[in-house]
Length: 197
Image 1 (cartoon, rainbow, N blue to C red):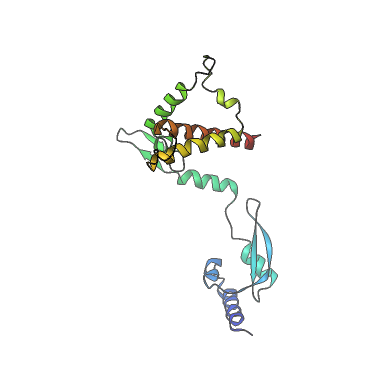
Image 2 (cartoon, rainbow, N blue to C red):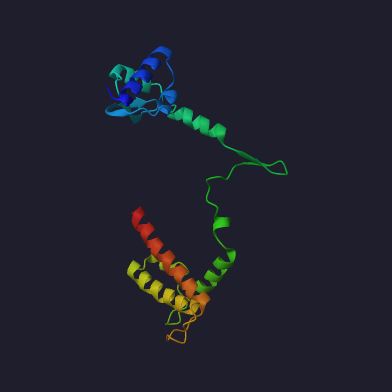
């Protein structure tokens, strides 16, 4: 017998005598063979449990069956109990905001106001009529967004590198950055629309 198999056999024998927990056996990091069973855990969750070298199928099922997560209903109860509560100086309480989207932190009001000004300025069409603010949401092909995105990106890049004299590109950096935001968000909008449909 190989040394690892002897060690595995010794651990299995000891487990039979002491009924030690799975966690303690696993800590030994003993070698496992290719066989195992797909065990149905409480809550209808299936998990693959490899069988230890020298372990019979009955021992394997006995060792694996009690383990695993609690039933789904119990998981919900545990999650609700573990929810942290925020208590404010006033005494008001709310659930913790961990894991919730933090729009206030992710976005800059300065950037949003400047972008809204850019969008409003570009509502006037060449025929003099004003398009609706959400006109772009009717659908612009991603190729059109991509071509425009690159034009404005090059404008910002040339300006950033102070190469304006080398290229025939005049750039208002704020305008070009807003155009990049518009084209990137429009492209993303089309992608998300396609994903949902």
